Length: 160
Image (cartoon, rainbow, N blue to C red; front, side):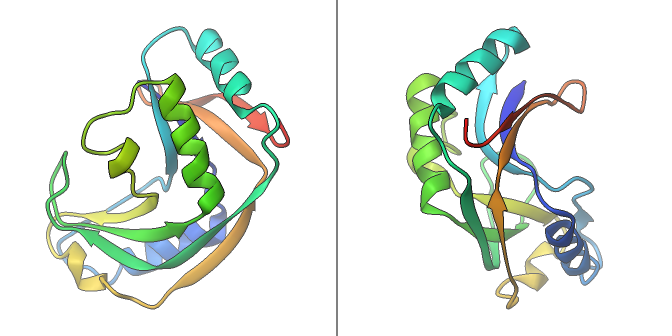
């Protein structure tokens, strides 16, 4: 499975790790990601080409972290899931464009898409809900991530 992700800066990962350390029984997320769109399976070079076409003309944009939310009953995996809330109109527009090109995953994409960075899952993950945290950064690249290999297969710099 491939996905298009926004690289999460070290300061945001540090913020997420700090919040996760407040949980006693939750499983902290080791790698912090901001998934823009799941791309499915296929040839990474053709997926990369399709992504580049979809991103044509996209300029760098701002992403803002605005607190902590909780998915109490996530569509997949164990809950609750504590996450950093992400606000970015440009990110949501990009997700919509990509949903026109790559089929949305039911229950988590399209109208159900909630941009977020996972902090921790299961156990007492909800103990950090409503924490007052904030951060902001400029997205100047996106990466095609290969989940099966745990690595980036392509990086797209903005403007694309």
